[in-house]
Image (tube, rainbow, N blue to C red; front, side, top):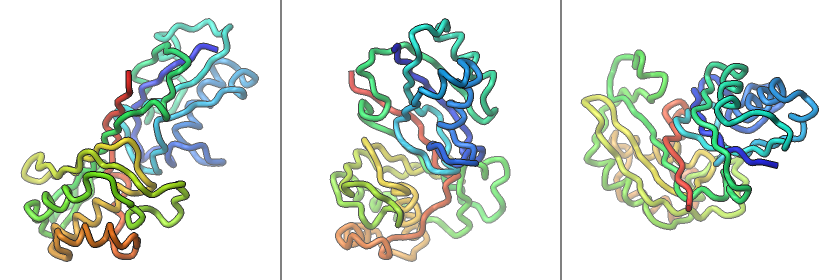
Length: 253
């Protein structure tokens, strides 16, 4: 069966996350529904769409990657498949590109580095247009305190203190290659994180902890202590999902 790589963009507000859930609109479910319309229910029922990772409900993506194996007799080239999917799926989902790839390509296991960005707005008023994809932090946010604290997350650590209560990962050790606080303009601040994989809600809990540091509720040096504690109650709040975006996924050659 030929394997197709899909490059996807979606508005997280329109979906209950990536993974199929009964009775809910999800990205994976919407793609499978679209393929069912295009190929027919019999063919579509045998398909499995694999994503680079599972984004939570409300999390956005600019360049999520997935793959799907289609039957040999499907008479669709990549351009027509892209157009067909965009024509029948939810308006909050855009199939940006479709490529025919080798069957050894795996959207999840071949992923080398993922880049997430969490956006924060420093303002006392409401966020307006930007509020759809940025967390409005109405307290004074000292970026100079957040920058050195963010660097302490880099490297290989046990991130038990920075995972959701229902996280069922087999190991809590992860390697963060980049964890950087970036000032975009007078109001917009981003946390940019690179790594091969992350625990459930890990980046959102890191963000919540850094915001508490920026607000003066914690010291930058607390990060090392929290990591060593492996205790979720020692870390900060979980930042809202809508501020987080999967920017890109890089693959090995």
